[in-house]
Length: 356
Figure (spheres, rainbow, N blue to C red):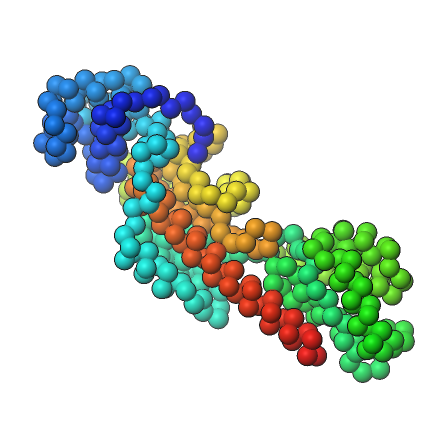
């Protein structure tokens, strides 16, 4: 969310602002002082409420859309609410438990898990949702095995920190024997651990010719792994949210976010650089093409290994507490499941390599 000067408010002004926003996000109609007095039990007169609303309007946190007595939140009003007044998340324990249980065990096909995440997120946040499939970050060397198969044939098994396992059959000029292969792999593992492709090439320069050639092959595999990654995007709830926009321009902007990869990639690159939930309100003053939207986005995954992004998109009067709560909880569940799968995958891959 863009940095903005948040005008200090009294406790009563904050209470009134929060009530206006909560009422407006539930039912996008101007909120009057009479409604606040009758429905919210503020314990003050209607005149006092009107005076406080006038001060909130002066501060640019609410505005009058027309000549009626009601007021609606402004973009700065929403930002103040999200930054200072919103509770951590408005999901119930039952809702959180349902999400956790539904996603605890991903199906064999990853795309089904991604679609499930998008559906749960859309239904829980009551908005449009997107989830990107996790991909490994820049590959880092974890473990290598060289296994003599037959004659001059050798199997190279490369395990990356992302959990990916790559196998490649090599035909050597002459067979050095399994003992020599194991010793070469030991030296490579000691030198190349935690290194990227370029570092693997540089570090291996201190080794013998055979180890350098194997290191070059491993680095090539790591670079191909990085280049061939495609960030697939799974969506749900867009058709249902379009009717919640108060003008066609907002609906068109929502469609563009989901359909135009350039806009979405710009947002995702910023989200993936941080680990916390991020709220973008009306383009945050940076993206005019998003000035009718609010987005709540988050990264999920294991930093330095594998990551993806997820979030919800809707009009600026979305229920921020529910959206933030849903995005945060789904992100946490997906991160926990990925961490478990990566741990299990690494152990299984290394066990297989050692048994070959």
